[in-house]
Length: 378
Image (cartoon, rainbow, N blue to C red; front, side):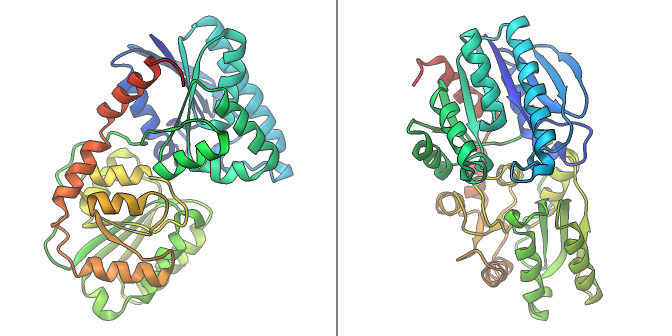
C-alpha cells in the first residue's frame, strides 16, 4: 500500500516549524514502518528526499507558517493564491507519477481541497484529519465554510484530533468523524521533576498567541503572592509569536520584582523534551483548544499539567486526573489552579499519566489509522 500525506505542517528550517510539524513527521515515519509513504509538504523551497519507505516532496510557498495567512486580509491574497496553486500542482504530480493508493490530508484546508481535487481526477480515496483551526476559525468564513463542507463530505474518512472537535466536524459536514489524537515521539528522558513538595518548577511551551492564553498565564503570575512564590523555584516560558513583546516586557517586570521567571524562544524536540521533563508542572492556559500536542508530550514524560477547562481538557482531566484544572478561562481562575497545584504532591499523579501515555502512543495511533482506512468507506 502507498499512502500520500498532504500537509501544510512539516519540519523545515523556518523557526517554529519543528514544533508545528514534528508530530506529522513522527506519524509519517511510523506509518512508513508498515506501508510506502510519500509526504507532500509546504516548505520554504522545493526539495525531494528519500529515507527507506518514506519520501518527502517539499513545494515552495511564498510565506511560512501558513497559519499566519488570513483570507480576511487583502494583503495576504496573493500569497494564498500562489500557495493553493503550488500545492495543487505538487499533489497532482505525485498522483500522476507515484500513483498512491490513498491520500491523507492534514488538514481540511487547503490540504483537503488539494486531496479532493486530485481524488476526483485519479479515482483515489482520501481522508482528512481536521484541526480546531479548520473548523473553529476557517469555518466561520461563509465561502470557506461551504468549501469545508464539500471536502469533508466527499472524503472516504474524516478524523479530528479531539472528541468535541470530531462532534463539530460531524455537525458541520453531516457525516461521521473519528477521534485520532495528534501526538509525537519525544526523546526518552528520565523525569527530572515529580517532586513531592514545593518549591516547584513551572514551564510553558507554545505559541505566544491570545488563543494559547499566554497573556492569561502572565497575568496569573502577577497575581501570585509572596507566599505563593515561595513555593516556586523557577518559571520558564518558551515559544514565540505575535505577543513576543508583551511576553518579554512582563517577564522583565516580574524579574525586576525578583521573581524567578525566564522567557526564551522556540525549542526543537530535544530541548522541548528537556524542558517538559525538567518541570514539575506544565502550564496550559489556552482560551481555545482541542487536545494540544503538548498534552501528549507531557503525558509521555510524566509531567502533570495545570490547565484551563477548554475543549476536551475537562474530559481528559476526569479520565486521567493529570494535575490541576481551572474552574474557568480567566487569569484569576488560573492563578487559583496554580495555587492548588503548588499545595499538592506533584509526584502523586503517576497512575493517570501512565494511562494517558499509553492511550496517546504513536504506535497505537498509526495502527488505528491503518485499520480504519483498510475498512470499507463510510
